[in-house]
Length: 455
Image (cartoon, rainbow, N blue to C red):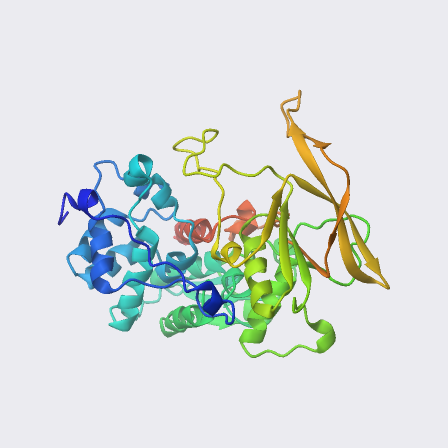
């Protein structure tokens, strides 16, 4: 610990975002970065606690005190080696992780000014790529093969660890590129896709083979039926196919043109930015439209930011649950529980009407096209059986003008068949939709299970 009093003298300083009037005209990353001196000062604020709650809270088991100390001392290479020992892809989590470590930081618990671990993580990794601190590994092969189904964060993490352990790994994905949710769900203004390409190129250089546009019949795998030749012969299989089915809203008018799942918009926009063209009738575009986003989570926020960049007229976001506490602490979920406090993202800052305790009743339209959405304010009362609270009407139905409605209500946990003993399910495919950092941690754990099985 280089400066044991820095947390008393150095205030928390975030890099901040590009100005709204500048960023809403492009899909470049919103978040800025600090200069190297300020970044080192921020690392010096880490208290090197006797019990590092940050390490406990991180699903990957990251050790911020160690790599923050190395960063403060200017040893960027050591900082990256310590970081990458637990985190295979810190350039991803350094951009999009909700930073569970920061919520558990003692400085957050005492002063609500935690160490800037997430930003430090991203800065360390970018410096490592810039200075070529990241070696290309050439593992000694052990003669065994593993097939990974799904090139999202969990599948990539499993493939990376198995490859380093000496297994010949082939990753199969149904889409045209690797990344899963990272590429096809998260907008470029949060994670530029060149960051994914850079890492995938490194994985390929280390010996991992990628097969795209490859559909895998999981039922055939479960039943031991005939499989494609390029998929046969693996000693073990890892299923990391994510949660492909979005939660639907089956109310009157769902079939109207203008009602879409959130990922229909987000995936298409990311594909357009990668150079893929779509016909006019295929476009899911918010230009000159009044947009209603149904769902108050991160996916809904991503829809808001994307709608602004496409040139929407207005955006309204509704959430069926009550408004979270607007403050740093959540009395209903005290430490060590995750504080369910109001989250205002960069997309919200760009302009959005937000409403809570609102139920969606019906999609309204003319000539098969959406023109409005009937909604109703509701409240929640305790369930005498102790189950989920009971929803009750709290206002008269009203109509919100909308030319586009985006369903951002989460994803359904996939139902998996019973597989043979050499098939392992991991990530969101096993747990249901969760955080990228948890998916990566699950992928690493599954890689260890595969290795133990094959040994």
